[in-house]
Length: 341
Image 1 (cartoon, rainbow, N blue to C red):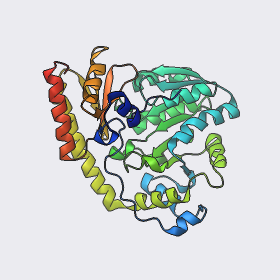
Image 2 (cartoon, rainbow, N blue to C red):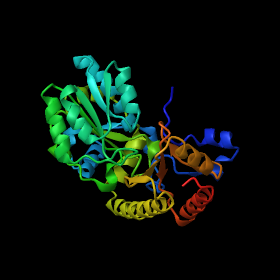
Image 3 (cartoon, rainbow, N blue to C red):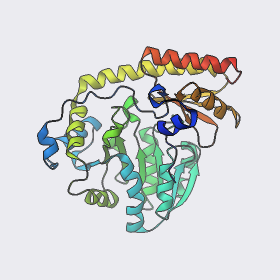
Image 4 (cartoon, one colour):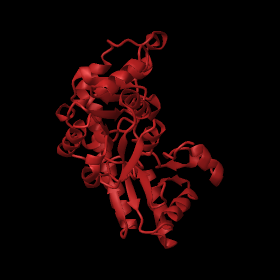
């Protein structure tokens, strides 16, 4: 059964009887400004990918990581699914700490590989129970809570797990917006996942990276040989990773839009908790019904948000330009009139 990750406008269109091109999709947390992909040369389509194409060097420079520790992936989801299997094959099943609220594919993948799942509410909670775990997953910043882990906490967690030959998996898919993650400072039993889908607005490219070493990383690297990532994805990814001028502009766009979105949500949901992580902001409600009612009322106005699996939160992606932000503001005014804020 597929988990709910946002998007799926076709289903929303059928449910609410609104054409897909009429929707403002704020459900995914993907940048509304995609990297402007240059025309891909015919030779890229006609030839098989080659490892010596500059992609790994560009990724190592962008992520500030050793080139020999960087593996290109067909989307970071590949590693999320395959790493638990590789670890189970290498050393058997274990107890794995995963966020109670966060990207749910982590828990599902570890459970499917035969591991026991232990959920934690926040990073202090993980630290408190880490001595009982074999492995742990940290999402930083967490989607949807916005919680961030500093390098000191990650190192402490990894060192503790390392005493039991355990792995710390760090999902940093949203870390580009405020990247303080020093990959070189992490212990050898930590693996970090990065993605071009979020900050670069290239989710459809299906390109990500695993940073780290060890038996599990080696197993995934071998699975991807010889052509695990398509030639066009590698070519586009290299261009995006070295384009510092565009990246600087993207940072400014995200900072400005994120600030405006948080101000808007704070104004309309002044009695709720609003958390932000750059590319999205989440509203956490104090009862079990209000989030669902707000989600439905916005959907009736062709604005699509991500309703939390527990029905207690809504996630809003960045609306982008002025007209989209004004449309969201007007829709939230309608909700306020109905007394749902």
